[in-house]
Image (cartoon, rainbow, N blue to C red; front, side):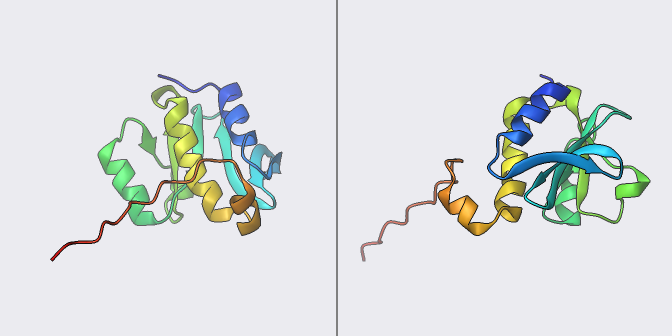
Length: 126
């Protein structure tokens, strides 16, 4: 279980609207003009934006060997993930959540990225 820098780049650029360009002088990935993710050479980790600081804190508590933050990220809904502890399936799933949140609605609707299947509700008989 491990994600290489090349695998991370391939996964990030596989999402519709993805592009690579520098952010604060570091190679980063965007969906259209919105920050998506980036690789941190400092500790071979991946920057992941999550829904909230509560979600980030839950990840930190649930798996501190994989997820961590630095002082720079303490006030942001972001978490760092050690690439050596992630697999490509988990990375893709986490990036897909972010992509669905920031991609233009039209792009999401037209996309072939698998949508989460809604639970079917069955009428109750009474």
